[in-house]
Image 1 (cartoon, rainbow, N blue to C red):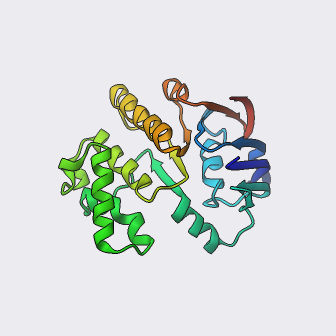
Image 2: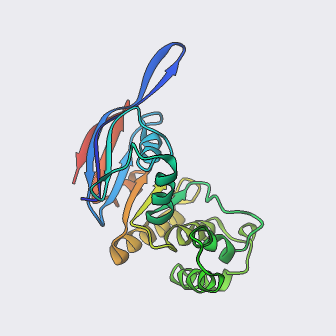
Length: 225
């Protein structure tokens, strides 16, 4: 298995009370799974996603990635794992507005210290894969919402990660564009064997999951494979 989560808790103190954002969550994810995480607002979906690779530190429990426990690693080692093995796709695209499409996609490669020529070649190749080879020199503000999200997906996969973590990736898109992005994530999942974990409010998006988790009050209420 790729990810194994065992009895994780995330506690916050609010008005002298302890609140469990995650309350004893356990599940497993295999390579090439497409996992959808659903639940009402405040159920712990985004907290779970951000906890998996240490962007939020859990209070107790354990998280293993590729048979290695990672929840207790130092921040520096977790950052290296994220840089190498994880791609992020967010609702608001998180593109840098003053960088061109290809420059945005090159960011993960620059962080790895890859030569500039190879950065350009790999970014151009992945932009062709997502159908944006004719938009490489455009700024984000010159692209449609759907195109911006495809740039964000290209940036997330350009360094060949093992996992994509997607937090409401269709939240800012209309229904037809949402399906386009979902189909593209499915294509990446199936063709490249990249594991996808996607948080979503959308019943349509949830159906793309080969594994479906439903959270409520920080607990997994349903786990369907």
